Length: 306
Image (cartoon, rainbow, N blue to C red; front, side, top):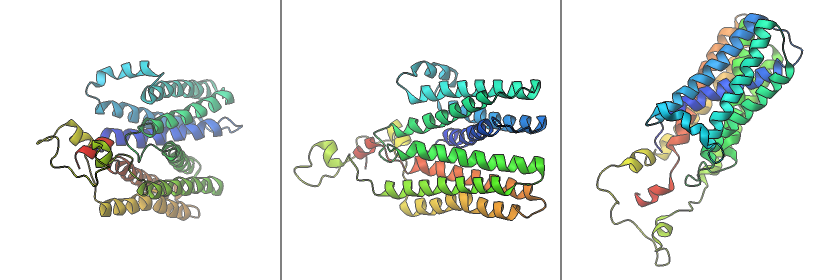
């Protein structure tokens, strides 16, 4: 399918922003007493990334000004549910941050509720794609799980970086948590790729035409002599050799290099700089991974075109 830049930006940056909100909700829901500046920067970055991603997603719509109407279809649409959940998450997390930052009244229950809502929001984002039966590569249980794990991994890396910036040290525990989250997220993604490569297509030229009983079927000519919406949006293809190369690049930038930089940061006096580089590398890897997520997906309608 055609990889839309706005949707790629949305899923990557909102995912990391909500991941940071998840960790902030669970972590600051404890007995921790961080400084006001610490809270402002953490919540500010999480909100900025989440909101920026959500806003960018509307750019893919033909009429962005009508995006609010999607919220009314929450009974049947995962896209609508995601929008409603995102608003609830930001409202609860905003109230939690407001009470803590300006009134010094951290209500742990609000932190946990906002963390759970953020988790469900990211799950809903993954389900937008996982529920599309016409795209077999997406229509799997692992798809929303990958979204959740990448959200936690990105949030963990951001949390680690900000902790180092404020306290001068990343800390072995937080560093270990960040690395474990990265390893788990990318290990599941690699399994997602491997299992996806072994998918047997449900829709073929034979099944689409009903001529399978006769024998092997091939198209005499395409349904259209020129390009159309389906071909432009659903017909993007990427060569297997290029996909494999980009997979290695995404794993290298998204997991391997960040883990190396975290290990370098542990004994380093200026470890925050290494962690900033780790975050940049991870986000670059995630953008590559998410581009592949769309580029490798084949819609069943393309059976009539290839």
